[in-house]
Length: 336
Image (cartoon, rainbow, N blue to C red):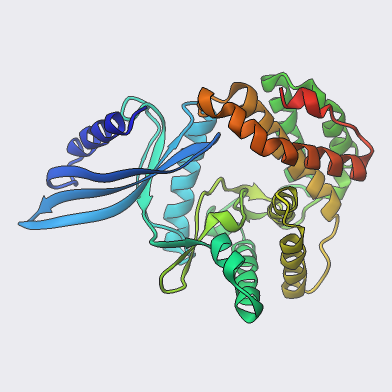
């Protein structure tokens, strides 16, 4: 979709919203990022209200036009709305739509944060400033987990210690069937056979995609956590997702700093971390290799470029899984 087409569709959408004001206009629509899960744009909404000109800087996030994309849009809106009301640092959210009639895909519109990614700040920092950013990054994750389920779900019936890991495994099996990726069956069977290692007696609200590229720092140094795929989960899933993503991406030193700070704050080593690293590697591999082959949100002209970027990460994940389980995944087949 061209920027002009999207701008026209977005203006049409706002014209139909009674709270927009008079003479709405869309200014400075700019693509910020594009990937297999979503496309993110920045724009300014201009309108007249009670004789005054109002300009709002906003972010439009478009998801894949699939059931998963619709679910992701609803989850992100729910997370932003409730976390904001509980004073957890996230952007404000104004709109959510899952009906593709408006922009062709489900979307969320939220506050635009003027600032930089925490990762960019981290790469430029040294000494105490760097240590402070690591503490901030880890502290935001621990803060989320320590608030428990109540921050997003006021009430939840008690569940067995294996309920969460059983759901993770059930989800992976469903993905194998839906994506026709039987290559992953041995490792999912391994996760099932060792599921006692994933027992959890304290479910929490988890971000499910937490990393330094999903934290913004504004001009006053205030953090904002973005890109929520939240779910009731084991806190170790979030931590393992962060650690495996950093290590796959070639930032083992940062990975080690994050883990050390996490264990310092929580006061103890993380139990069964290897198991959760295997789990999160597998979930990431299934998502990314499916998107390489079938992803509706990945433009054809960028697929080869995307494959070139992620192929080294896929190989690293497969090698780490092998070192932890002895199972060999067919990497070349996965990258086709």
